[in-house]
Length: 486
Image (cartoon, rainbow, N blue to C red; front, side):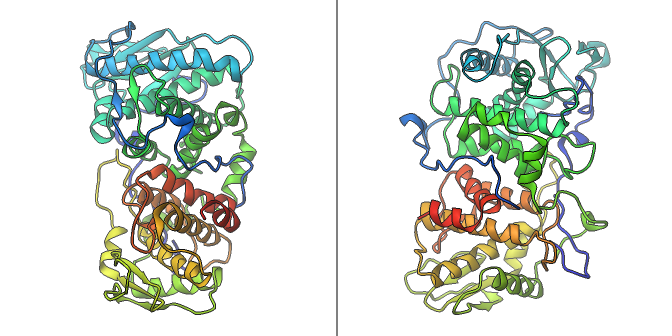
């Protein structure tokens, strides 16, 4: 966030994944593939019950199915080890899915990808192979090659890294994105002049279509639950994001945009992926900040009582109440009848008081991890969104809405916090959102999810649902929140 006159802004703490893992910038296609607010006309559907066709599961295992034979596929230069088997099993299930789904959604005949390449980015130069016309020496990447309709991956650095951080389903997500490009090309969803950002978000969307297929229990080699399993898959999407989406070197979109694209495919199917265009992305962005103002990338708005007081004044203008809540910056409200105190910010309905433990809240906005491959996008808005959410509870109390229930009050709170977020992006807002703030909010919601907690701090276990509710508020506004989360 930024204050008028102070020029303090939010910045995504992490550098872009491929800026750290050398070699990711190889241009293997006509369109580079370096790595895997106003209401929108293409926001995901309102589905939130997760009983998709009666078979999607909120709990249970996520990952490779036990006892299932490996797919009878091979990769050039492969070693037959764990990561190649994981990649090839992913490809086999993607082939089976798109062979059946393609004719239902796109014109023409679908030709599955049948040639695959594997390499070890940590290997000496003499062990490098050629993929898509270039050497794989020190190339940490996975990609689809449009020239010869092949897919390749680094089994030595990239796949082990994403598995260690996010689990084996992260590899499925990475390859589902790459296979999305293969589908995209045959379906002619884009042309030579289509911006890379559009192509990448279409591929994310097509990956989301496949993820739903897995979550419904229809994948031969993998299962995916819709809590920690889907949370981890979205986590790798957040980790491999653009730090500054307006930078011409970036191609995939912010974490907020990437997660949105995945969820469009997951919720609405392949047909919805067709409508991701330059105009649709621009409409979705609205007034949301997508680039840093000069100097903003180097600063954070400090989480102090002074800053929180400024935010509270903006909140009162966005969502006025008949009875203004009291703000206490000396700590959370410790004594509140029939309410479990939430840390580091609490709302007590009986006293109509918002209590904040400022040092503890500031810790939520402080960078904790220098690892470039992480979904933890810490920054000032990681903290401010929690404060916003507790004010939104006061608004709901003023309107005589229920404050308990993770699936009702909790998701409604996340949604209305999204409404506030959009308002804070508008010209003239003080404080005002800066680039990276939405990604920080998405990261918080996928992680602890405090901003989607009811008055007692209860949250739904699905980070997907928490982010979906927030994004609904950002893109569709207050009425969508009130009608959807009753």
